[in-house]
Length: 244
Image (cartoon, rainbow, N blue to C red; front, side, top):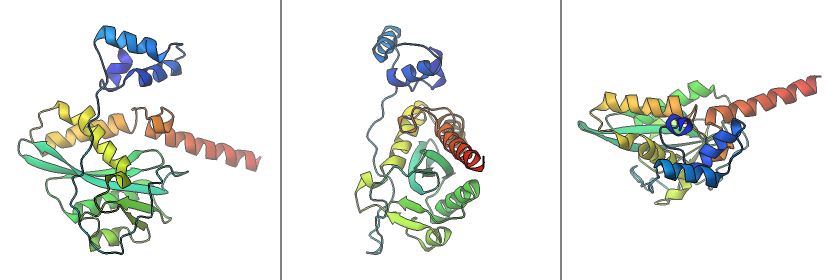
């Protein structure tokens, strides 16, 4: 089944059905599920994620501004960030990601062979360049030492810093879930030799599949890129209507 293969064998019956509907096919989820069983194919299953960042009770000044409000009404209202590790034969490498909560798009990522605040700062600067940010926004993270460092505070100057409560994973569930997806749907299929191999795999997943192609239930079964395009197209239509 082409849709299944194009999804890197990650889509289950509900998403495949949605894709078929987009092509004008009239078919029920149950029928697609039956076909998948007959063909011996199934979606990859996501295992529960685990916290991988370093926890630090930095001070009582670290407040949870976001309060699990995961559905902002526009892009660049809330970013979330986290760090996870990827195992290679030459040792662990560390992925820092920043997600825009509106579309669940990964707007910046940095892969490094060490854990350090400088890598998180690099990711923030990359996100700011990519999104051309001019207004304050919320950036939510855990209390890992990289995120409470002076360097991170300087990089996010003008933004509103929000922090998860200590040892409370669900406060940053969206970016944690993305890292779990990355590993389950892609990374865990490979024996990864080194940093360069890991970088190639992360690039392939985020830039050629997750952001651009992979349908997301939060986005009405559009990809994050398509969801943002739909938002800006609606803004343009509204502006044209007001001008006319």
